[in-house]
Amino acid sequence: MIQLLDHVIRNGGWGAIRTAERAAGKRNSWWHGTLRQGDLKLSDSLALLDHLGLEEGAFLRRGLGTDGEPPLSRPVGDPPPLVTRVRERLGRPLGDPGLGPAFLEALD
Image (cartoon, rainbow, N blue to C red; front, top):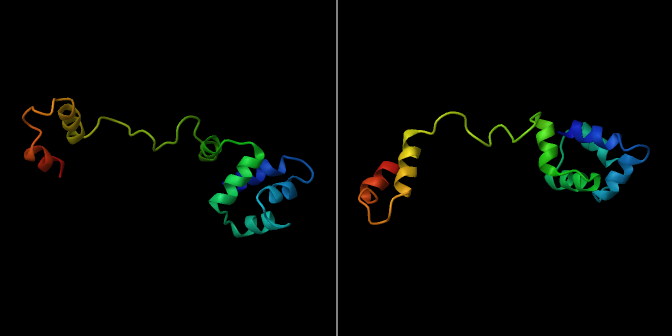
């Protein structure tokens, strides 16, 4: 992610690194040290993304190489049987049988 952010910053032209450092409230040469160490705080990365006018989620998806949602956002395949039973039971009125202690034990 740091390399991708570095690429975006460097495409800003002459003085882009120094301007980005000021936008993040950092001293001169801070960005070069950050690149060498490979350590960037979340607050600093958000300040840089804000300065660059980039949306954080879109930037992360681009860095992960996903076009749509992040890969872990939706599970693939059928839900487990317990999830299916819970969905069915949640649709029932509260007075229906099957929503008592046996239901809670099934969840545990």
